[in-house]
Image 1 (cartoon, rainbow, N blue to C red):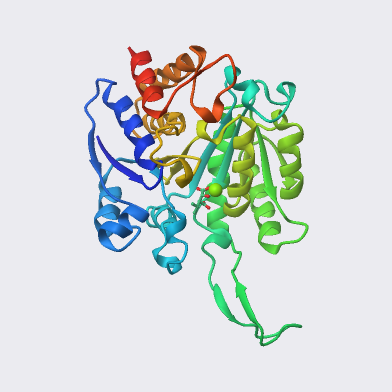
Image 2 (cartoon, rainbow, N blue to C red; image 1 turned 180 degrees about the vertical axis):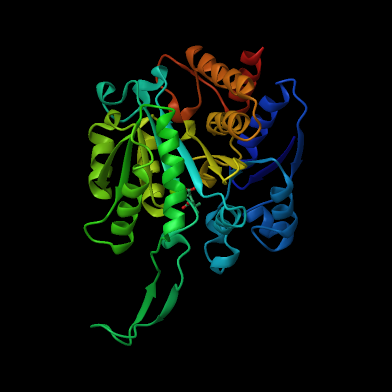
Length: 356
Ligand code: IPM
Ligand code: MG
């Protein structure tokens, strides 16, 4: 089994190193090959997603990804910015189904900014479509406004669009995921304003006919944002488009105390996937050895379960993570008084130790 290791930028290298240590401690034979991506790809080969990196990602059975981005690349033309690496991988490999679980570990209930009674026991799954929507819709650009009250003025524009097959395939993924959980699915849209999302709602409603065992409801995205911080436990599985999913999954992450705890999987139709923490490259704390490696370690567990068919090993990692939390070890992002503050490497080593 071949795993492409793409650490990327900022804290990416530090947290991926810990996840690799954990994988190596499982006693399985993985072939791992590392390649630069994001700002690191740009520095090494002049492009955020160098050809060699894309080739490796294509031929691997799974991809473990750190994070990309740094302010110092903000002035580069868009096609050369680090974010293009992750967008390019999602598109080139047709990784259209993004799973972002938000689980609150009982030990971290005090780390959430919400009241314990609102979040304790939280276990929700956001499924975000990753290949369409305003993220990729054409045309887009900057131009002179061709019409309207500001005709002739400079404007920026993007195109929101979703095709029927795109909505159908993510809807099937979401209904199937709901079948394995609490059998409830909330489809999030903005059908009251946007044609794209009226269409989304109609198609999801149609796909629902094939899943009579699932309770489906529809929610506008503004209300969903509110419900996520008001009564998040009411949700089971949420399915939504690329842009709304980007925003709601960050909000959901904070329910769990720290975005440093949240893994994610981006899958194609054959369960090949890219696994990455839900957080970014955090250049402000890069190189300080304080980043939380648990989201990446938990992403490696998702990789074993979804792409490499090693569910027992995935369980072992998840149990080891629970164990280190129960031991009271905390990186600064989840630290509370009475617990033990540790750095990135110490946290990773503790997980490796707990595996045994
Ligand atoms: C995410 C990130 C990316 C996105 C960025 C880095 C392009 O925010 O994975 O949520 O917007 O999808
Ligand atoms: Mg995001």
